[in-house]
Length: 306
Image 1 (cartoon, one colour):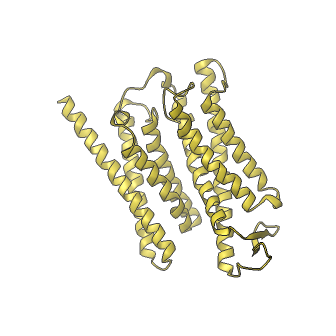
Image 2: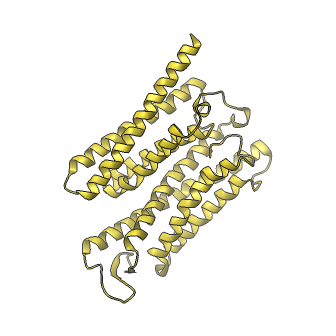
Image 3: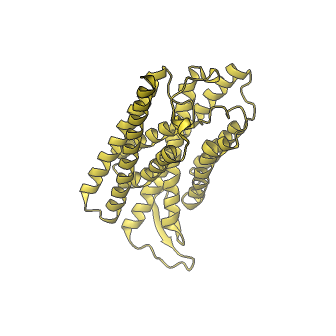
């Protein structure tokens, strides 16, 4: 009977996961269709519905695991991927509500779709099973530290991707800024004006500002996450900082985005130069989150979760 219940629960989880992935994939296609056909508002509304559906199903998956073993499901890589996918969809919905721009969904939906696809189709089945929390993770700091870090990753990834999009759209062009950080002119290496379309200038300015705002929101979360991790490390191992690979890369991530925010103060570094820093930060976040885990070394290797 117990085996039957476990199989049934696994099937329900699997169905919810597959529907979530399908919803995110459909939303991604819809957002791209909206970009291609701006007047087709139906695609945008349907994309919002699909993202909301995926978000609700991810809440169910996380809540079920939380109730099953009375700890927040952040104990392994699979659970952290679920939480990161939920964070990406939640932040996407909030940002779209606040800024009301379809580019946010067009950028965020591919990340959440690929993240969920990785957790669903590439991780072995044993990593997806619910298991009791290991002693090393039995702490109230688990929820505080890991959740804040993953939320910061979600914001930084979305903001960084917007910067990469900015670089792609503005390549081979020289962009100038006014004192209020708005794009004014764009020219090629021969100083010939090629971006005469005011709409394109406004688009580049919107992307640049959105990237800055989102990264600006994610950076404090990353800072709080690192500090809470240091406090937890002191309680668990008697040292605030051990230069563990995960800690080292978290610090590198923090430095990269601190440099990005600093470049925004200097007008000569705004635009392409700061976007390059953010684009580099996109790669560093993934190295910190997944790359270090695959090495299986350091104090964080037992959890495979950050």
